[in-house]
Image (cartoon, rainbow, N blue to C red; front, side, top):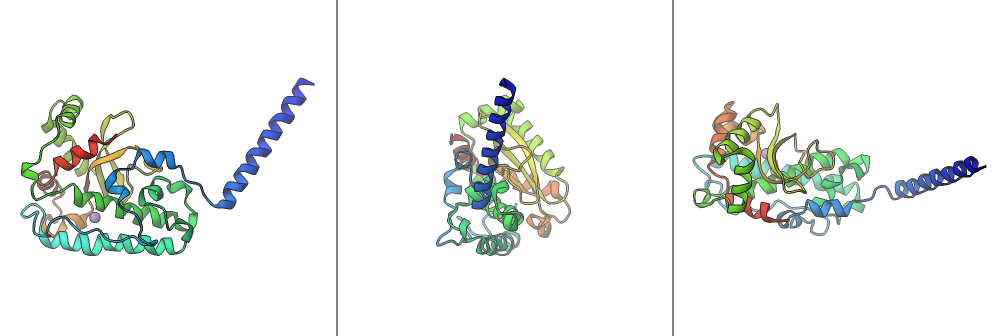
Length: 258
Ligand code: MN3
């Protein structure tokens, strides 16, 4: 008697779950906004579509400004061609899913699994590309030599890697070892732990599909388009040059966000 009651209750619950799933499927997707907020930062919240269209953000410095470490030609092509293409293709994808058009970039890419399958891969590739590059331009600066990590960030890095130099060595080694195209990152998780991680292609640690999730505060693009004109096949040389243009003031600001 008791058993059959339980069974019928279970059956009711199962049917309710199916019904709920049906409603959710009917709506197509639902967004986990609580999770998106955790990974939001002011710079990324600024990446809102205007009238449903994302635009290429301007750089805060000239293409020549990061010479001799990152050459002007690479900067110009990287920004006006590569990044622009991610923006254009993201907009093209969203044209096919108008219901997504008012979503912020953070909302879109922290909920890849919730996207309609017809646009999921395109938003992953091009939304990720737009997000990653928008961050990349911000974390480099011609004034890098005068920038320094906050006491709080320096202490966290030293606690984890014993010294700043060790951190740089570990980050460089990880970036050098990325197979093919991708990114190496310094991320902070919800418990404020730092770690170095990588993502393939244009995936980003904020994505729900990332193997290791967290909020990136530093990242390096190791696609060949980021360095081939100047450094050719010598990725390690590019990474060594990149270390000279990191804006640790900006990285510290991102780290300070809770
Ligand atoms: Mn790139």
